[in-house]
Length: 326
Image (cartoon, rainbow, N blue to C red; front, side):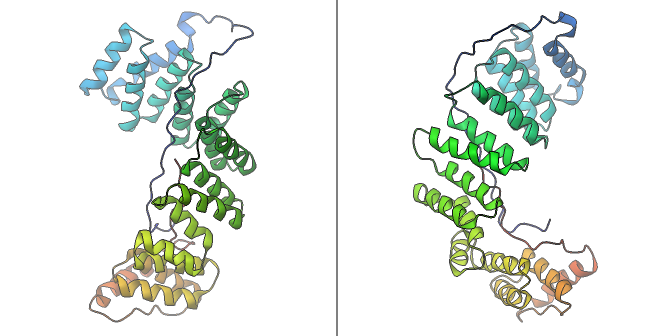
């Protein structure tokens, strides 16, 4: 994919602390201790410990704590978070799974397991986990439905995702900007631009300073002047005109895109995304790239020449990042 102009990191839904006891119809058949999945998980952890933080004093201390008290939930969550931060999502998943097995009534732990599946690029696994949990929880908190919606979206199951996002909004004790933004994003993926815009505008009513909702609203508005206004308010004029050019390129309106790119480069001659898109337009319409004349033109030409001669521009123009999740 082409570089993004606006790098807006996804926000995360804070897991709800509400809990509910689960009544089990039948207890599972006991597993021999040597074959118990938790024991196997711990053994895998020990085997990989040399590569996963043996030199980290905090990790060593947390492992010792868990060796003495395997049900110390606070220590288990801290250790999982440490592994995730250190770049070991599989170990983090192992520990969150252990915690979820030990405390099956805690929805926050189910969310953490699902999030690790997402981190491992396995959103479908995370979605199925939350679906199973939600099936037994008529009063599940909004956060569970919200995360289920996100994971279904990322699995390409947009209709199911929409249902979960709407349930999250219904279950939330008070209106939340990020829930409307999530639903808007789902609708945008479905090609329902007008419906998406309503949700993004509602998000901005609740949180007028939300750059993520404003960025998504601008994208849903396409090539309109209102979109340019929203982008300018959060990105500045150069990036805003480049984003508008990106929309025009996707629609095949290359001449208009060039005008927007020239404006973008007039504001900021070293705008890498705009230079990249100008190289792309040149490839697509077969016309030479023309830059606005200023003192930075020579440097800009070198960059665009490198883009044309070196790595081929990607098939899509640079647009603001869409994933805007809490």
